[in-house]
Length: 280
Image (cartoon, rainbow, N blue to C red; front, top):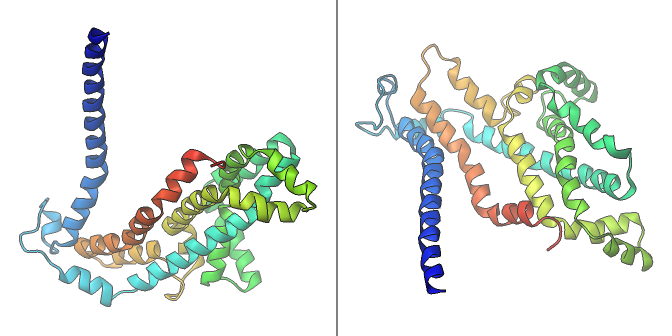
């Protein structure tokens, strides 16, 4: 017995070392580009084209100028509004839709795939129809119009993600609520929604990040400075004949801070929603 335990310890030790090496490699893979981006944000105009890794004299003025002399903060605020608002509306539409597919077999077995198929198309094919529809609604070149587009665009992926969580929810819980006299709306709001709350948070974060990073639709549907989102504002830094790469990097670092902050504060709900499913 002791010989068996001794033989297992080296195997466990080797697995631990291998796991540590893999984890360190992944951390370097994701962290090093970000660290270099921060380094570039502190470089002068001449240093960025010379292959310098660390600036000789940090140019903190790059950060100050993009914060005070550009629409960066307004773009971040617009992106946050469109991302959060679009994600909330997507969940409000996707939850009853996914629940109807799972519990009532609405649309049969192919409805989920049919809804998901347009989401896989290149976004450019929808630009002209969306532009025309928003103009008819009087929402063209407005932030709330872009938020509505984001909400509708991400409904298919939200339904597709929520469907898996809802299938794990025991139907006996809903049947017990119906015996007590609850209707379908009451069951969905009072029983199903609280049980899948971790999934709703996880899917909402995914939809919000997709909205925050979206560039193509925001470029065509928002032209005024009041409605431009962060990706559009960043693209305008390239409008100069010789763009200042250090300022672009500084603006990029500032732009990703809200995403990192959301990941840090919401990681418990995100991991819990993606791993544990709907039933706790």
